[in-house]
Every structure is written in C-alpha cells, then in structure tokens.
Amino acid sequence: MISVTEAKNIILNNLPERKTAFFPLSEAAGLVTSAEVIAGTDIPGFPQSSMDGYALKFKDKNLPLEISGEMAAGTTAALPIQDGQAIRIFTGAPLPEGADTVVMQEKISVENHQLIVKDENLSQGLNVRPKGSEVTKGSVAMAAGTFLSPAAIGFLAGTGQDKVEAYRPPVVAVILTGNELQDPGKELAFGQVYEANSYQLRAALEKTGVKEIRIFRAADDPETLRQILEQALEISDMVLLNGGVSVGDYDFVTQAARHCGIEEKFHKIRQKPGKPLFFGTKGEKLVFGLPGNPSSSLTCFYEYVLPAVEQLLGLKNSVQTLHVVAAHDYIKPAGLTHFLKAFYEEGAVTPLHAQESYRLHSFAQANCFLVLPEESTGCKKGDMVEIHLLPV
Figure 1: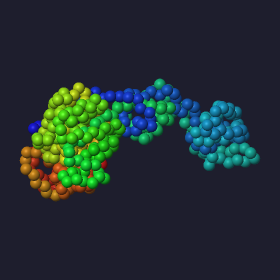
Figure 2 (figure 1 turned 90 degrees about the vertical axis):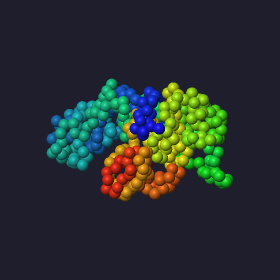
Figure 3 (figure 1 turned 180 degrees about the vertical axis):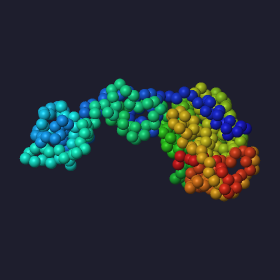
Figure 4 (figure 1 turned 120 degrees about the vertical axis):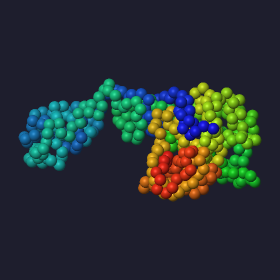
C-alpha cells in the first residue's frame, strides 16, 4: 500500500496533455479558454451615448441650442450636427457627426423651442463611450486560461464572438459491477441493493463540467467485465470502475485491467474509507477502480478523480483545504489516513454519525472531510485539524 500523498502525486504525474476544441458560446459556460481571443473589431464600433439626453458640441454648452433631430439605438444613418445645434439621443445610439458630449435629459430645459444646458459640471466627452473603449480591433479580448463565467460568456458575445477555443472535458465511462445491483424504482429481490454510484458520480461529474458520461453494467464475470472494459476504453478518455477492486472471489477489476493492457500505477492506499482504490493508464486513457460501497466511492472521487478531471479542464481544485477547530473528540488507530464525513461552519468542524463505508445518509449532510493523517490517533475538541471543503 502507498500513502495518500504518494497516490495523488502518481495520478497528477500521469495525466495526459489537455485536449482543446472550439465550442459555441451557448455550450461553453464553465469551461476554460485554451487560447487568447483576439478582437475582430472595435467595441463599440462608434462613439456611443451612455445616457438618454442631448448630443451637442461642448463648445456650445452655454448657448441656447436648436433641437435639430433625434438618434435612437439601432440608427443606421449618420446624422451630422452643426454649430448651435443639439440632437435628442438615446442610450446606445451613435453620436451625431461633430458632437462630442451628451448632456443628461434631467439637466436641460427647453425654452422657446431652444435647449438650455443646466449642468454646471458638464465636461467634454461626458456620457460618451469612445470607439473601442471596451476592446480595440486586434487586441487580446480574453486571455488563455480564463474561466468562462456567465459574465465572460456575455463579454465574448458582446465582442461578436460566436465560439471560443477551450479545454475539452473528458468523455467518462462509468462501469458498474455487481450482480446484487437493482435500479431505483424497481422492487428488490432477496439479496439485492439499489444502485446509487452511477447517480452520484454522474451528478458530481456534470457539476464539474463533464457532459459526455456513458454508463455500463457488468455482471460478476471476468470475461464479461473484460469485454465491457475494452468497449469503454474505446469510446472514453477516463473509465471509472465501481466495485470489484478488493480481494474477494468475485473482485475481477484488476484481472480485467491486466487483460485489457492497462498499466497498473497503484492498487491500495493507506486510507479509510477507500483502501482498495486502483489507478492505471492505457496510453493517454485514465482508469480508476473505485470501491463499490457508495460512501467509499464518492470519497475517492472527491479526493482523487475530481482533481484529475479539473486539471484536464484547466480548472483550479475545487476541494479547498482549510485548518479549523475540531468541535468534538474523535479517536482512531494509527496506520491509515481517515477521511471523515463532517460538517463545517463558523470556524469549527463536527464529524458526523455513521462513518461506515456503506452509509450515505451522513454523507448527504456533509460539506467537508475531516482529514486525520495516518500517524494520528485522532483529535480532541479544540485541536486545529485539516478539512477538505467539498464543492457541494
């Protein structure tokens, strides 16, 4: 067995190069740009009013002005302005040719059909968005490595982009093993349990930005598992095998992995839960053998699979490490790192009930892991401890 730190380093050192692709803006939210976005035009492409008001020549601000027309947003014909004139203008409209300033409509009066400016603080260029003030043609509109938030998507759309080059999410195959598994909603036969892993793993992967997730079912038969694993490797970048990674008579994952040409990088970690975790590679494809118990499977996902997926996507690790105060005592034997389901609030962490590897009820209430290292024998109330805050 290896340590938690060794296992994480092995995974990170075996990640393939990130893949890139062009995505329509409508499908790019949550991704990370893999190249600079160069502006193809000035935005705005013309001097533009930022207010409803009147466009004028600043030098005429102290004169009574003739109102000679109006310009609304969407106007396609240029309208010149002469000395001594003002033009009614609306937010987003292009400035009339010759105008350089906009006075707000609240700061004028109209007397004898002439405009009188009543803004003592009016300055040249006020309430005008200069041409190219958002971005200039040929400049870098967005740097590589930018997270595509809703605002970033809106900004790119506003610069005229309809697609963007970003890191491509991996295609992930999830293989469920175990004759005892039954689909939720169906009646359980004797000895059956409801299958939960595909549901929680799909939800966690989709939250990360993975869109293509293929689910396979494999009976407890080595040849069947080998065939399904070969099929999954053909169509995916990453395979998550669930169950069958221990040492029981029906645990066939490591055997099937060898037959499929997967190079084992490690099998078993000094941790609880999730000790039998398997990791291997076949070329650039990553293979994780997760424990079948739902709590163990999800713990291993957050600690090992999620950081790998986020690296491939160019994202920062969403599992945050904090050092906080323990709210209760917890005793454990030395020898294994423990990832305890816990709840963190107001600077303190509380380990939850039901820490067994098959128990998900407490996991559903957890927002972090309380991490007790392998040499530790536990913690006492008031101790500073490490937690991994989960992206729930």
